[in-house]
Length: 435
Image 1 (spheres, rainbow, N blue to C red):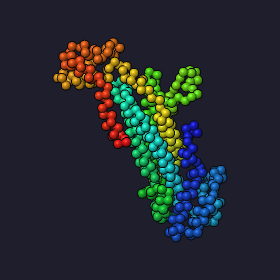
Image 2: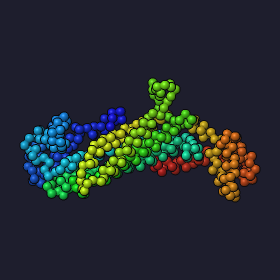
Image 3: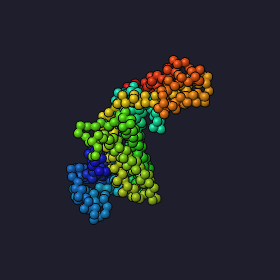
Image 4: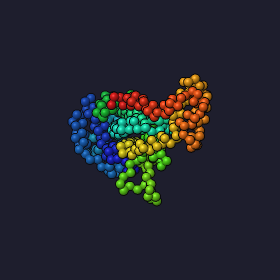
């Protein structure tokens, strides 16, 4: 993660200070449970909380110890003992390093997901507001990048809302997937620590016990978690790419807000470039890239190794920090998006009525013309218009084969824009309910 694409609240979750504080809480909660089971003195558990809880962990001191002992958890425990004194001998009773590391990582991922869910709620609110604002703003619908049939800009935003609503559900599932705790000892058999300790720590840390941890929590959970972040990133890119297309000079139906004093190009003063959505496209690529190493982490030697560890030290912070930034940036883009209904109408009219071709085709079939013949007749009149040679309605009226089946009034009726918008309310009700 780099400061340019980071927000302080998410970065704080991954700071060494936060990590060591979580490590201490895991150890201290375990001591509470051990004290209740009579394994260690209750006074010792109390002392551990009092002295450790008041401690300010010195990251540089821990790093210095680690350089000597070559083990991060031992370095932390050594530093912790400097605060706690003799009662520190009861810390880490029957536990293994992965109990602390894996449980801490999952606590951090849960906290990160809670922030991502807040981001998602803000994005959904912005999409909903703008969708209703442009519920009946006509625009051209495109397929393959080519004009197809009319829709509304509100429907396009409703599509994005529905997509990100699914993304929110996936984030909830990701949080549930990753919210497990392991305090099970060297090979996960609880040989030297009672399972009730794990249950206590899990509850205290807002997690649930991992059914079988084998010392490390199975990494299929993390693979699913980061895969879901990748899907969310892909949805961000889809919407960002749409906005980039809409901002093209030849289209200009919508564009990113351009603030006073902003400059779009070092060379050309006239430029207003879609820099934010281009940035979002790039950030989405990075978040997706973190999913693959997470999947490769699933296969460990026998039941356990730490080949996953170095990967997760990178992708945990990077994926969540980047996605957090991207969601907030996209929310700002949507919130301030400049929309140009007049350009949408101009583009709708650009092909001289060809967007109504299907209605004419269907009308001909309803009058007894075979679909093949109807298609031929409509296309015969459409292609000159495509080349800029006339108006579709005029050509259809002048075509004797079309006129045999349809009156001039019937042809004109097929060019009613409102026909295409008659079910917008139904679509909005499906997406937003009765809001």
